[in-house]
Length: 171
Image (cartoon, rainbow, N blue to C red; front, side, top):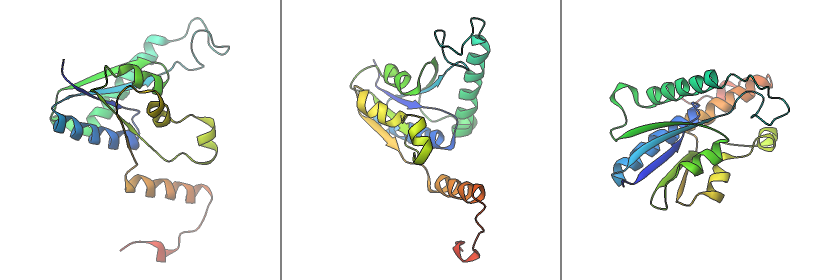
């Protein structure tokens, strides 16, 4: 069996940064790259109070497959990552799906470690923390790119309607 580098994919900028790092690690290790995207049905799973028996699971899964294709295309383009690539779409919570995708202790799990402060950090559990606590293999957490951090700062500034001071701009 070949070694694998398993990367979590959400489609956001942080997961694209993690995908690039995972591809580089797979090249260094001579491993396969497995891109895993977890999805959940709207309103929760079949035992949830908000779910209905006629949930559109096939449509949700198809949307997840398309999101994975778009993320891989955005990350690598038509040339691909330069290693053997496999995509996997899993119904479930992201952290648990990633830990389940790891085969053994020789694999490497790569996840994005975006900033999680304030209310968002309290409402949604950190996928990276879950993976660090439960994975049977090494976990590489990839911080957001500096450009992504600046983008979030601009969005916060706009949300709070804070005026931009021209002296803050970098030449």
